[in-house]
Length: 475
Ligand code: NAD
Image (cartoon, rainbow, N blue to C red; front, side):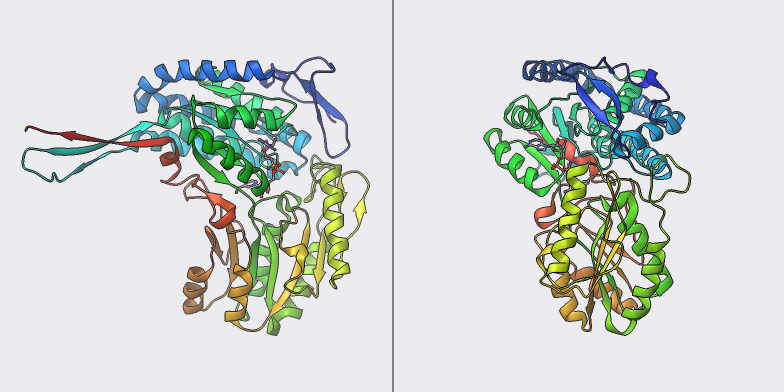
């Protein structure tokens, strides 16, 4: 069951060795493969090769780069099943979710293949009669990325596709828990004709060492990071030395609000999708539920029923909706948060227990009150704390009372309230009557300590472009 179906996507696999990185299946702890790791000198060499390769890549026309990206997109979709199985093996999410992620990840490649051709400059009315002013867009240069394990493909394509579309070369350091998906996606890029040095993957036993090299290396002109706020803060500080252009997609603490005029069935459905996708291990997943007093009991009883119906198990098994969490440490951390919640006065309404292996029961906590400290940080597991509220004003204050500002959700059918609340929430993204909002067509990103920069949408390619101003005089 733990076998990788299509090894042709993983020429990187090696024999077990002390120096190799072993990749585990979080559903049962079995090793699914080994890969070699790079030395620090090899990471530096990869950066130099990237610099050399970028020259030819940026000289292609946008249309030529777009053709390579289209082919890459097609190869991902042709290999969707094998990639999904590989992702479930190394990351744990249910197979249907993995398939969804492959399609979602591929959609960024398709989108930026089109956007490559729209990296327009502008003409500006001159300030004297003999001058003409123009802007052009140029790639920032060598771009590097550091990505997390929770979306092992999409977090890479969301960065690599706009970088390559813009004419940058690209090096990614994936999370050490999920490098196989990264290599498989890179392998397909190479099969699509994208030169090996234009898109590279580096893996090292110590993520910190690669972070040090990426942030301090003057050749790297752009660093795009997705991960925790703690690591993002450290990378931004280190990048100051080379005044590096950075984008930071960091942690969240999403409020999910159900007003008294909400469609409760719809809200329950949205709450389940938002909270329990990927076993609650997403940066945009609902972290705190605020439910209006008048509908609290009705919402909570329907929600608990739905949570009790979720099937937990190995993501490769038919019908499983909740897979394992990523590793034993994550499981321990989630259980500590549940215990802390109970110590602080919350009640476990369902779930709350550890299961064999890296599994945690889907859990609902009621009687939660602000400011209980366990809801100030991401829970990053299948745990849903429920708070009550009675006034909109008090609710907005509580929802915004966090250092984070990534995603927020609310359910209401009152158009005035919808506009007022959407504008008052201090978040980069707001789902109105919708619990899953991410798409390649729209800008994804946060405010406050959830980071800066946007991925996807019209904005995504701008992160990899510089605007150059040309002034033509003496006309
Ligand atoms: P993490 O910050 O521990 O790790 C993310 C990546 O950084 C991994 O590749 C890791 O190896 C690397 N890393 C760790 N320490 C490093 C260091 N000192 N220097 C350089 N690299 C280092 O986060 P995680 O636990 O892997 O992922 C979960 C986090 O990612 C959550 O906080 C989640 O909210 C966030 N996330 C954010 C988004 C977004 O778009 N905003 C998307 C997905 C995940």
